[in-house]
Image (cartoon, rainbow, N blue to C red; front, side, top):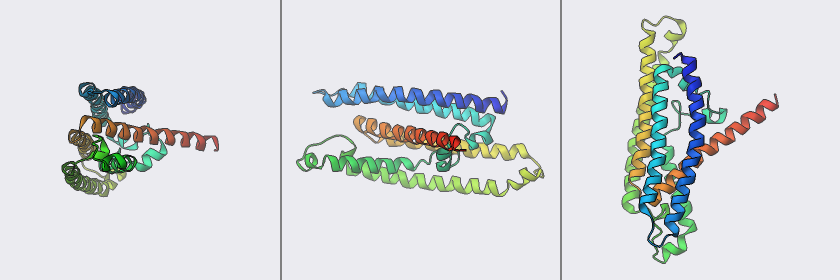
Amino acid sequence: MSQETAISSFKKFQQSWIEQLQHHLNHLRSAQNHHRNSVTGDVERLREAVERVMEHFREYHRAKWATTEKDVVGVMAAPWSSALERSLHWVGGWRPTTLFHLVYTESSILFESRIVDILRGFRTGDLSDLSPSQFRTVSELQCETVKEENAITEELSEWQDDASELVMGTSSNPEQRIRRLSEIVHRTDDLRLRTITRVVELLSPLQQAEFLIAAAELRTGVAGWGTSHDRRRSSNV
């Protein structure tokens, strides 16, 4: 498969993946509502819906890994993304620490909306009800992730400093240089998947559902808004 074909195939995969994500989100919302409205709850149904979304993310990771092996430069350019999405990219995708900001934001919003019940001693079991232990673990994980992000940023900066040799055609081993970039992107994507997995693992099933719904809505929302912006910009040219 040529590099052009690899990128074209991944672009089609991306479009299909987003459509399937919406389907999985609808299933997750249904399981979430059923759990809340059921007298005894339905944790198993909720866990199954959460796992379905997580497997969908793992599928994306596998597909992007394979595409990176074939054309890492094309992956970094991300032609399947809108201009807005690319402006927000870090090493070819979203920054892992974004997930922690999402947890804090969702927790704060839900806490404010349910503060009366919380003050009365009712346990909501959702993201507004994160325990001190959960907050501590989130904070520790965030610190670890920031360190890894900084290390990757430094490694990419070093690669870019040496990239002039590729442009000028003076590199003694251009394939090795490109391979190093692939390794950086793989390391970054591993951090993305590992971060969302670890965040999900420290949450309860209901919290997991709320978090994944918020994360997916953020992703699809930015993609949708960016695509609309690109269309408006093209029509005005």
